[in-house]
Image (cartoon, rainbow, N blue to C red; front, side, top):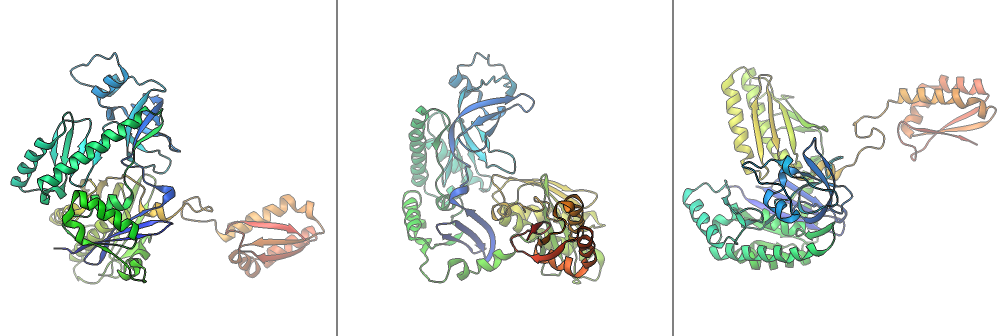
Length: 491
């Protein structure tokens, strides 16, 4: 059994959370005060406009970007009751039957944060998550987590859920409930119901208005990740430590002893060797122990991962070498997906294999590897071209996007203009503006890298420009000028 630890580092700038298994970093979460996740928050929203082609509406939730609400994410009964619709209920409900109106108010919950140019995705199927259960406001059914595999446990939890389910609402029994006492589950259901009732009082405010706010990232981590498989949770903030202890005293007193307050002067991430493991979290190329490597490229539409044998010489036969490299790569890919929180469509270009049985073996191995990931997957299989295609659930921006921002020079393409191209731009600038600065002393300011390139390899170009316009031309390296740019200053 893997030894799982959670390490939390809290500062005024950001809160960082690491989940380690046998000392290896598998999950990493980062939250900053100015970029809090909205997932789980409930709003009283105002309908701005409807797009019939998308069968969706854009709603104002008070954020800088409007929420995207698909019409099939609106419970028909709730819609009829809230908005006094005159729609007749047919045998089968169709999204196009809902006729929202501009400026109409509706209760929504964020299911996905803003991503790229897209605003947050919202739903009107409201749910309040807890440690052991998820309270379903618009449903009446009871579900049990698929990760609880023993039939006896499932039946017992289903009976408990039936007894404690609030009238007119539904429940999903989470995996952590398998080892919880019935009183602990009942107590949490009551707590969630009270939190929902209290938040509904906020609906008297005009839209847009925040109705229910999710707890901070530390409490969410304890709620969603701190389970019986976790040995210890280390945290370096006394204030957050007290909050965690207070939360556990209500929902799971037995787990309080596993929470440790870290007081060592050495930074907590250095102590547990996490800072060292975070160095390559944004690297494009990741080396495998065998000498092979994978390359991860994230585009607007999908994530492409390439597998290569590299320097690997573990096996002498080509088929065995390809299979062993692919298997090792799949293990690292499953870890990187969780670590970087990569979502959406993912395509893995595996090393081609001749035997079909080996493809089936790899597919079985990959399904086993992603079993511990709490995100949902849809695995499409391995194509005849050796491409493994699957999707991974995305609810927020990936770690790479949180830790980086688009390059102001290449605008996110990952490349900048060549120095030779920039020399061409400089020459054309003097052709256009040379007569206006004739007979002057001028300074050509460029980045040190470009200034060296001009001085060493293009002295003839500079001499030609100086002679043509009778200039005294000097080249100066300036760190304030970015690569690919330049300034001409008259002295």
